[in-house]
Image 1 (tube, one colour):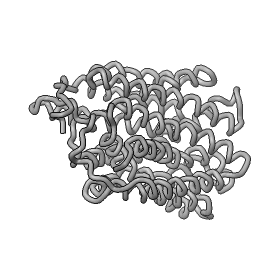
Image 2: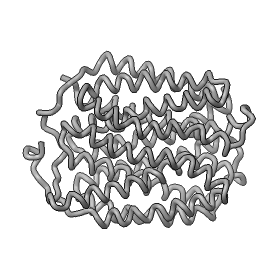
Image 3: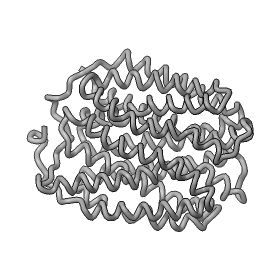
Image 4: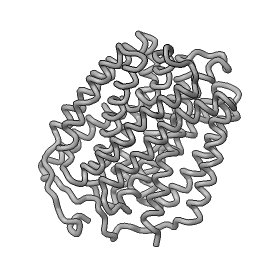
Length: 392
């Protein structure tokens, strides 16, 4: 039998790697552009297929996680995404770059439906573990901007992909050697300790659909655009890629802290009680950021990542609470298919909006989209709490 803490530890590491790998290009593209002789708006769309695969691939990987083995799928995740990162470091032409980024997206699509379901299966306190897992994902986002900026400046952009790729493959080998396949269907779990009335399930589904599209699109747009936004609007503070990476990393740390806090609140309060006030954060902060630069922009950006990353924890907990073990990977697969497909489209949308009116137009547009999250929180029904013994 696997140790729950060991499994959760590896899955948390996988969440870190998943977001780290997907966002290396967002930070490295600033350095890659001059080397490859391409503008930012020309080079950025090559990431679009990878982000679409990130969401679309989750349908198959979630199904395989439930029907085959979540442990086996996670072995494939570690080894595959590590090899794909290494491959990016050896590309010579834009089309090769697009293919390698697509491979990263395909292997990255394994984590969320499979890894999140594993967290729920082994968690003793769902909210706390989901929040902590979110912290690791956020640290992956933050570290990607920081480490890529430092490595890119001193070793070149190729090593920014190769070094984390090698480390990931090594972690995958250790995971394969220490974690076995295990059937968790009959185990006692912290998940699914809340229910809603059967006639209100349509409200849960509708709210989840609305908020996943709005938040996933905004989340991805912000994480992709933030390095370039800071490069443009923090010019009076610094032009150093490494220091810009440090600033971005510090901003993301606040998002990580928020996810842990939201996770603990979800163990004590209903989803609606937590989600409703949180839903009012994003739109005003995004609108304000459109006209700011330097230190005020950094402060408002902290509010943006706190709102976006906190909402992600609520969305994941919603699926974990309301689905059973045998269907959980597939439920997460649908959630992430919708979310990451919308997020993938946001990359092209960011590039188009940037061409139309720079970051002012882009931030105003996403502020409008985030108004939908308020409607979604209002739609959520009340929960009916049930004992853990009756939940599974």
